[in-house]
Length: 157
Image (cartoon, rainbow, N blue to C red; front, side, top):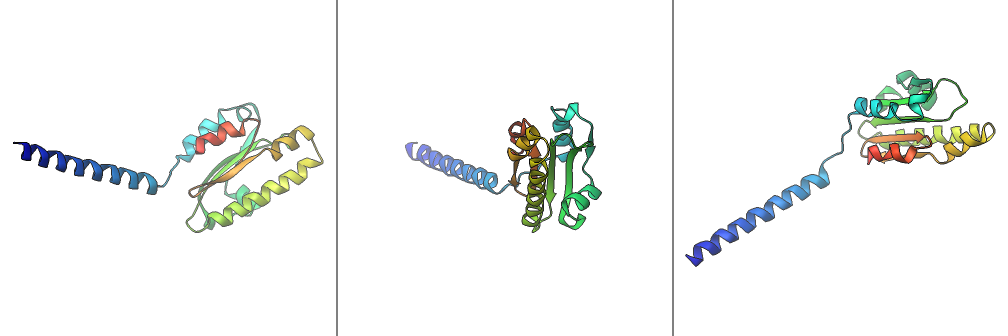
């Protein structure tokens, strides 16, 4: 009887170890995916975006303002102010495989341009631009300029 209990416990331990190993491996290699349309709605409802006249970032804006072509991304969301008296904006782009660095560099170039523009315009908006949050999560490249940029960035972590 003790031998059977020992074998049973041994088999149970092996199964438990394998289950933990599979879970650990899948959690490390599972890519993070976001529903960008839901995220867009959530962010749009937050201040300052819910309080401002904003325009959607679309393919034309990405091409003209960021120099990002449709061949470089799968999906993108974002809002920009209609009137240039406020720097608050956000952009989240799901870059195509192999294009993350290219998209990140173009978003960084845009952010640096915004910093130069606002440095000679409205000081409080310039401070917002300097405190922007930007980065990469998996294939997602983002730029957030807002008083609560850190709070919005948490949606991507």
